[in-house]
Amino acid sequence: MTPGSEADPLRELLHHMTARYLTVRSGGFEFEGKRALQPALVAELLGYGSARSLYRGRRPVCRSLDGIRAIEDPDKNCGSCLDRKHCTPQVRLDILVDHAPYRLLLAYSSARNFLLFIGRLGPGATLDRLRIAIRVVNRGSWGEIVFGLTGQDRARGRPQREPPSP
Image (cartoon, rainbow, N blue to C red; front, side, top):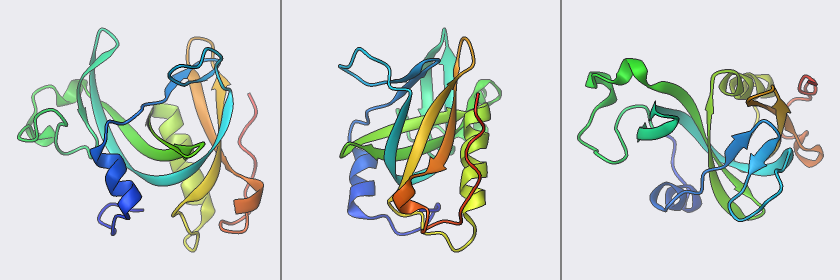
């Protein structure tokens, strides 16, 4: 699950297909074709890594799913890009929700929450296909994501505190 590890076929397929991105609103997750926001979900973690996005007018105009090369122009290197200082550093999560693959890009406090969650699992925890509980906390004009283990996967990671309540 860490960068450079062997990729399983499902993870490899996810990286090469048209990804469905989950949108986070202050009231929950927005799925394509569904009207109601979903405030929490359970997902299988397929992989995670670094990412970067350049936004203009609140729309992504350039994106890298590894923090090194742009998706649309593989010759464009993030390290030498003049727009790099305007990019948003992110954590990329590849997850399965109801057997469908989704990608979630986390920035700022949500990225911090995920990295703290992974750190609390401990060095011996198995991350491959770990079932995680993901919840959106309403912060007014934006949603912050917090993470926890589902009941059936608590044995795979160390028991941990519950995510902070809003």
